[in-house]
Image 1 (cartoon, rainbow over the protein chains, first blue to last red):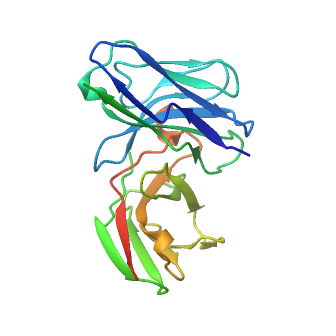
Image 2 (spheres, rainbow over the protein chains, first blue to last red):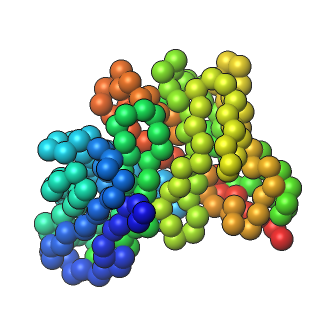
Amino acid sequence: NAGVTQTPKFQVLKTGQSMTLQCAQDMNHNSMYWYRQDPGMGLRLIYYSASEGTTDKGEVPNGYNVSRLNKREFSLRLESAAPSQTSVYFCASRDRVGNYGYTFGSGTRLTVV
Amino acid sequence: DAKTTQPNSMESNEEEPVHLPCNHSTISGTDYIHWYRQLPSQGPEYVIHGLTSNVNNRMASLAIAEDRKSSTLILHRATLRDAAVYYCILRDPTGIRGAGSYQLTFGKGTKLSVIP
């Protein structure tokens, strides 16, 4: 199993450009999450989707939008990138049933210049 | 929200046991104690979780104090591959304190260095 796959792995954007970060999981998990991690910091939740068809804001949602395209895919969009959005972005998924662990992707390293 | 306190960094010699402490004095009755680790340039990886009793799995052991105000992650024989940042996280699966309470909230964790 591939687990959680994120694309792209690296991206450089100019201020004001837009882009979409893609995330897909093949574990039939119900819930999916987007986090960002700044240097020397822990992860902060941007948005999450508890189940297909629902999305909710996390701790730092400003400047981002999300789409839960289907059960497998959860995308994160930056409409107008800003240097403050330079970060490493992680997607994660988990099964809603039970209290099991989250599975994380390997991350997208985004630089906004 | 219930918070955790961990040392910023720890060192261990290779092949020796490592005890990573975590304080969570404001833990509620519905909070589970989760541990994740993050290897360099990778996403976090689930390690173990527990509620009240000590737990063992192939990766580690989790020792939970009787009053649940602290816990310790135990790596029985540290290897170089165990060098990572270890996060102790409280998670309430019931969401009784609101939808956000059952999400994972990461602190800065403990950076474990393993010396060959």
